[in-house]
Image 1 (cartoon, rainbow, N blue to C red):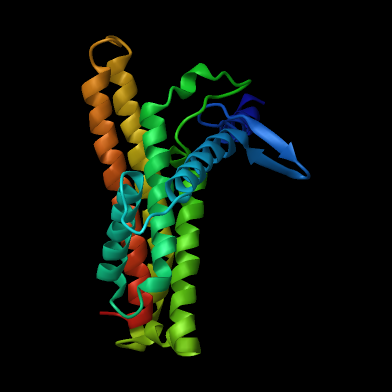
Image 2: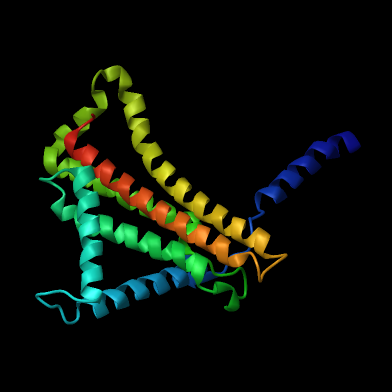
Length: 248
């Protein structure tokens, strides 16, 4: 009897383990859907900061820019240069808002995790953190990028865009298809993994000596957060440029 029960018991244990989640999460039930409330709350805060800053910056534009308008125009020029470099002089214009929005959302989200005291807000389950340390957010951003570069390629080349999958030889068809799946995977896991690792790097040394370590470690986190936003936006623009030009 023990011999019979042993495999069944093992299967039961495996089933129980499969239901285990990493950490606790706070969910909302909206209609028939269960949504991740922690990510929505922090994402709304980031969006509100971006919209509020943009509204204040452009409410009274001047012909000769001063103060905050100078700063906004400098950021816009940075986005133009980034997009132009990756997509090309002739095609970059319509893609500046998309690349700029990606960069700003990721940048402010990353910095919110490093600067805002999310921990003082108590939730029934889990805790608030940067939206980009959650894989759901980064996958959504990566899928938006995928939709953008497919749209860019199809808009310019029509159905001829799919001819790239059999170039330079039809033998490479499976590899070329696989490449389009690995792009969003690499974008999403790179961003989420780096931001989550950065928060852990801050949390571990800060816990024993909270009054000494935080400032230099937080500066490191701010630097890496900016770098991750730049990498994501640069790769997104490069993928869009590649889809319009074909394989290099």
